[in-house]
Every structure is written in C-alpha cells, then in structure tokens.
Picture 1 (cartoon, rainbow, N blue to C red):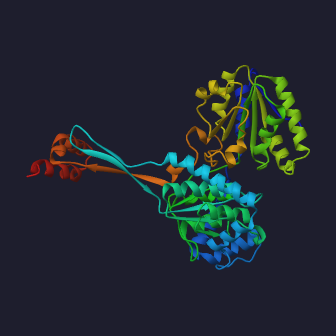
Picture 2: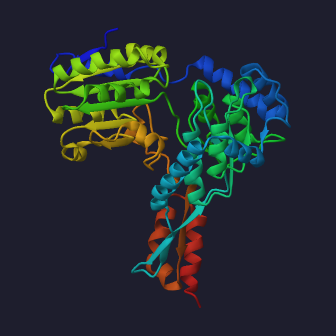
Picture 3: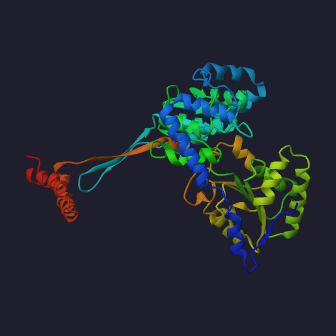
Length: 433
C-alpha cells in the first residue's frame, strides 16, 4: 500500500488538495428518497412501521414492548460491567461535566439611553433525543458526550435510541446511559429511529432536538426532519489532520490511523515540512496495520482518502489546515502555541506530543461531537449552547417610545406596513397619559 503524497511546491497543489477534500460524504438521491419513504411511513404508521424496519435492517423481532430500554435495565448494566468500566465512565462523566459547566449561559439585560431595558432570557430545551451509533462498533463515549451537556443545560427529558443488530444490547452503552442520566432508551436505529424521535410514535415520544452522529441514512434523515425538530449537525465520516515537525514516528502513525479505523470513508491527513519524517511515519503506519484488529477498515480508508502533504514551512502548514478545516487537528510540534493563533478552522485542536485525539474522545472533557466535512469553517463542537435557546426581552417606558417611536413608525410606513406604524403612533399620541 502506498499513501498519496501531495507537495505544496507542485504546480497543481491546490487542484490536488481540492480533489483530496472532495470525497463523497453526502447522500445521493437514492438514499434521500429511501429515507423520505421511511420517514413518512413511520410518521403515518408509528410503532408498526418502526418495528418492521427494525426487523428488516437489524434482524430481530421488535415489538412496542421489547424496544424499550428502561432505566432499570440501564442500572443492571451498570452493575454488570467491570469495576474498571465503572471507574472510567464515572471519571469521564465528571470531567465532561466540569468542562461543560463553563459553557452555561445566563440571562442578562441593560437599560439604554432611550430608557428601554433590553436583554436575553436563556431557557433549556424541554426534550432531546440522543442518537447513539451501534453498527460497526459500540460507542459508550457518544452517550456521555451527548447526555452530559444536555443535563448541564437543564434539559428535562433525555431519551436515547441505539440500534441493536440481532437484538444484542451492549452493556457498556447502557451503563454509560445510566451514569450520564439518560431517562429512557429504545433499541432502534437508522432513519426509522430519527423518524420516531421527530414525529413520535405510540411508544417513543417526539423530542425538540435530535443530536448524535450516525451513518449516511441517519444523516439524511436528520437533514429531512430539520424544521419539525432541531438537529445538532449533519455529521459525516470522521477526520484527522496531524501537523508535525518531529516526534515519535510510531506515535504519529497511530494518531494518523486513529480515525481511519472508524470507517472506510474516514480521512487521515499528515502534514509536515520533513519528508524524512514522512517516510518514517509511513513505515510505522504499515507496521501498525499488521496488528490492528480493524486494519482492513483502516487500510481502505487510508488508500482511498488518506494523504501526506509536504509543505515548505509551518506557515504553509497552517494555510493547508485552514483549507482542510479538519474535525480533529493535532499540532504535534515543538512549539504548538506559535501555530495556534494561525488556525481558523478546526473542530478540536490538540496541542503538543502528549495529547492524542483519543484523549479528547474519552476523557479530557471537551465534546467529541465535532463538525466534519469542512463544516468547521462555520460550525462548532456540540456543547451546552446546543441544548439552550435564547429569547429576546424588551421593556419600554412611555419615554422610551417617545425617544425612538417616530423613527420606528417611519420605517414601518416605508415598508408599507401601516398597522405596524399605527401601533407606535397611538402610543406616541397617548404619551402614557
């Protein structure tokens, strides 16, 4: 296997970079149409349709009764997992909670020179649905990263859907749901689960927002139900960019592969000024692939979507990063803080040689639900702010209307909205008498 190399000093560098980043991560019309049919079917037929799709795609006999994962079942899983499992999950919850508590927004107001009091009221969402992936691997960390900030935000009702191929429930996922405060779960996944959360069924309640990553069918479903309920983002395959000017080739190679093992469509990019280091990292990648259990997945990912980018300077490396806008960015540099101010677009940034992406995935505290497919140009990691909404608050005295009402009425007339203007003019005539 040979990993693609792109040289910044080549004449067609930008074209090669564009081609690298143009991988097909979106869903075609065939997927969109299939998902649209599933959404409508579940909306119309509820649990019956939901269980039919679950039987078809996940291969077990779903009923309204046995799809429910009770809080008691989660508690049992918490008891059944190992002591080390519980210790690790609890430590992760504590750290994720501590970080996200810094994000909590509060009400504010001020009174301006015209005498109006203006402000903002922060309110938690009433209910959210967590989509937890459960196909090629089980992701208890995804439960924590979605549920904990929702709790910190003050969401009253948190439910979870998780696909269970062949009806097998993962105890570690259920234990994570228990310790992070998920109130109820449902053993369903795919577009049909998104439909259930968006529209509600006889068993699954409709929620105000759906969060959490999934496959292309889940992504397509989230896109289509947006407006009926909120969504966090359209998440694509995972990505990492590693910028290095030295370090252990074995470490860097493992970091490069950490996202490639997720999915054949994942993307790993290594950026360096040192082609000798690139050779060493590539050799270490080949060594790792000989022993990794998920090597076939990682190998396909690297062959189809991976690349080494050889740049002439670290400034050029920063420029490449801002074009790539990666989900995960490791600055494995002697002085990562010197590059940090130059980075504009990245979901999560890991500084130095001792913070691999995996530390952020599980234990550091910041959220691992991150913008993918270059959406870090305009999107942010999941956080408490995704579970809170803002209302504008406006209060005025008669003097306030007198101060700015005539100009507001003028603009209303200019827009042809006479009654808008009238609401102001009547108050201006009255002057509070």
